[in-house]
Image 1: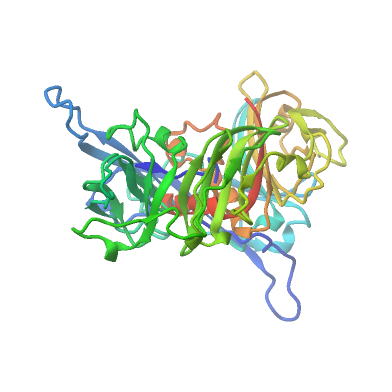
Image 2 (image 1 turned 180 degrees about the horizontal axis):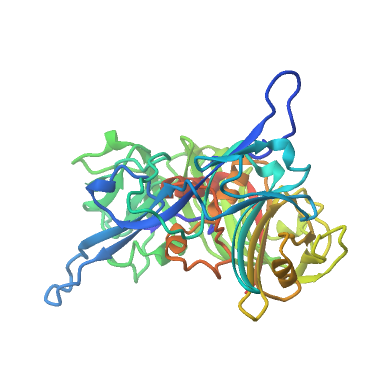
Length: 520
């Protein structure tokens, strides 16, 4: 099965722009309500079947050397679950727009009751930040792990995950959150029109299932339509490798297609539509970017509100398949690569496929800020309370980016470390934060071990939500192996594995441009 992961990156429980000031009249002042949950790992069983799952890992039995062609047999599965934490070992701070420490709440404070922290939204200054963090300190050696969210990206009610915690034996799991539907294993034979050569299969919003034979192609179906497809077959395609992830990255001419539901399946061979059945169908020309280094290009189509892989495109000019019955406004081009030292992920609806797709100079025509290596440098206290700023790019953004994710990992070479993610409005020079601790604040002038800045352009609030929630690795957090990963937020938003994968899938048909700059 080919897992769809358009972004390493990246479902929606946040509504961007909900933070605000106090209300008028006799209405109560709006508040923020925060809860915390910690991950833990258990072997999947009937006793935890009702729990929400945030990640899973499958373990297989040792293969029988006498049966080399036998399919792997599942031995057991580990799942990452979550439990609400009543007395979390975390702190919540308020910072102003320049990273100045305003105040903090610690468990036991009057605002913190039964594991829930509530306070007035007006306590966060305009353009200020909410920061959740954990501080471990022994003498002059500290480790600080923090995530900060600028006020405009907050919702009134939020559940944050925490770094690894010591949990009681009698913990109860979280059961809320969207769970995956029940998938049914099926087999279907295709009508091959008398020519059995090709790749036959079904593309779904969740997985792609391919076969090199039209007979009894195996797949899984739930409650979503499927896109039945027939692609050209490469000489080295086999039943064993066709569902490996590398197979999906290769260009294949799409010959036939059809959207179906379970009602269309059965013992009768499935008939598909040929590209060319309609006089409006075509095989236009694809022209890849000439102003950037392209690593991946795919066409997706939107159908019934879901995203489906239509065709992988090559990094060189080639023809692609256009079916008029899909609708000219339902095709989306996803590209990934490097442009002027920026890594980029871009999805855009293709306005007119009849004339082909020409991406030769698309990125050059956009207002993208000049790249700069990520670095920490001294700056005035009017920009940063601690006098240290992160240079993110050379000049201010003029392209109307909506949000910026900034990750820094700073080491003092003596065991002290700051690991901090900051979600901010776009800025080319970001002030680092004070934590009202001389040892912590003194580390900012030391070595920048690794860092990453992501700049998002979009008019779709759901894409912003996905960026805020996609930097997750529950398994790594539960195992405490996430520290050096620039893509993981320790205090992220609690979303199930299925919610996250569904949001990632939808990104394939949502317009956005994401720029990435990484220091490793």
